[in-house]
Amino acid sequence: MTRSWDDADVGRVGERMAELAAGLPGVVVEESFGHLSIRLGSKRLAWVLVDHHGDGRLALCVKAPPGELETLLEADPARYFRPAYVRGWVGVELFEVAPDWAEIGALLEQAWRMLAGKRAILAYDAAKER
Image (cartoon, rainbow, N blue to C red):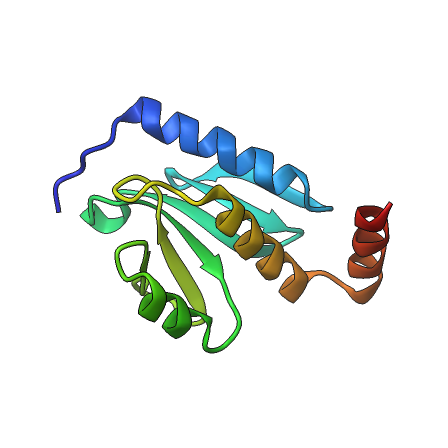
């Protein structure tokens, strides 16, 4: 697949993802192996993949509950894809289809909730209600 994005696009996507991740307690965003890694402690909740294994994509790969990938693929196969090498994750196109940043934020929060402890989730929810 030929890539149609450039380094400036990668930078803009990285900045936006860092903004979204900053709203989630304990989440760290760092460059790792040429991609952006989004982690909670030692647990990875998402990657921003940059031409992963030459696939030409600028995409998010995010942890998801069972059945989420199939639901999203059925709803919008141009936006979502099955990422290579991982199960239980959703691929989200970040360039060829205009990103729905609200949906991406919701996917990141969902992944965070899968990995965060009960106390962290309760504190997060209480802070959101204020």
